[in-house]
Amino acid sequence: MDCAVIPLNSTRHGGEYLLAQTVDFFYPLVNDPEALGGITLANVLSDLYAVGVTDIDSIEMIISVSTEFTSKQRDVVTSLIIQGFRKALATNGYNQVHLKLRELKLNPWCIVGGVATSVCLKDEIIFPSNGRPGDALVLTKPLGTQLATNAYIWQLNQTDKYNTLLTKFTDKEILETFEMAVKSMTYLNKTAALLMHKYRAHCATDVTGFGLLGHAKNLAQFQKNKVLFKINRLPIIKNVVKFSTLIDQSSKLLAGKSVETSGGLLISLSPEAADQFCCEFNEITKGEQKAFKIGRVEEANESDAVLADHVEYIEVSL
Image (tube, rainbow, N blue to C red; front, side, top):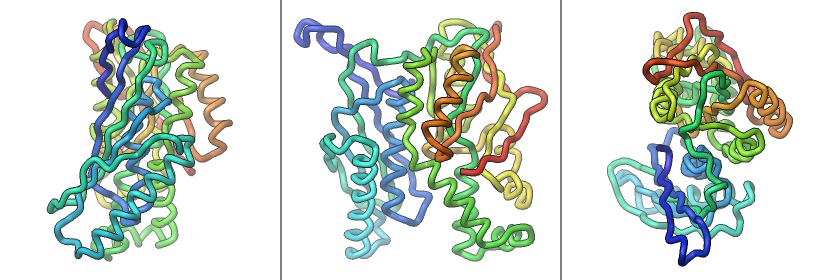
């Protein structure tokens, strides 16, 4: 679902080994190449974290540099993206993982991403199909990254939308909201993946391009049992709801359909374990990130995910 999990030849390897591998890439949404490198690593590894894999054997970068760059701009920007990627690897305990630049191409658009691979024992993987009625749903990052980053771009370009935001917000507040989004996007879901094993999570997925509700629907339909994922709380980065209301773009955000980049993990686990998971996650991250119980799993005739009739919107500061 989130990544490929392929059985390896048990006889040759002397055990039940599996190859877990993911390929992911996206368009840049920040103008700091080094920060972009950090976001790229978090985004690439997120699909492995969604199945509980935290040990990485190899990682490759894919970079497509815009043809609109001068040769000097290409050299500087590419070097800084790779530097940010390497720094994030070292900071998160992957300094021994070999990094290979797989592809570097010219393209009308800048695209960044990579390939991450891990050879695992079966017990190291949490297969995304064992959610059950009665489970709680946990989300490990707030929503709203796209609008938070867009607001900063509007600020830089002095657009009409930026002028609309200025009627209620200062430049400092727009920048602070953007910085919270960057902090969230660069934070790896590694801690969440480790705690998934400790608290025996039943299934998980990461939240990215299809939005929270889109990924929840996909995860629900992947379950062995017919289940309904009912979401009753949406944690959203501070100021983003007000941004969306001011510029008349709140419908997708408040419906859980807003596109996210390097979002958190949506995890299904027992209610008791969910409380303990959130408590320990928040203690470990010390405010760098926050986990929230956002819903529950119910029996259903057909698997699906929906928002509850009355949704609580939580403003999150990081």
